[in-house]
Image (tube, rainbow, N blue to C red; front, side, top):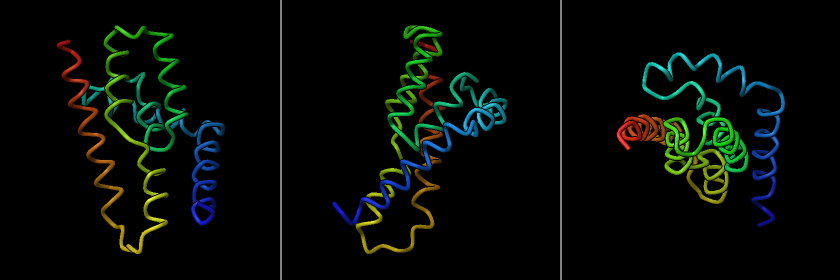
Length: 130
């Protein structure tokens, strides 16, 4: 566990800086037109940006979505699908790859992010019919 601690601390600090600096807000504002194009509500772009980084940060965003739009609204259903069908990719990768001997990780994170995006798009399309 002691050998994992520096990696864990680094990713936790990076997530907190990402949220507190306002970068996540401005980045989500910038990519929201693209989210609209693929069928994901603009209100969920911050959730999609935070979820691969932090589960706790994403649950805070999810709680705000539920408070503002309701859990049974279309946006609330899409938020539930996004939260439930994705993983904290960078956190898990940091922990797993820091303990493995694998050093060529060129495709692992991009493929995981692409799969998450496809899952979110498909989930939001299905949520329209529920």
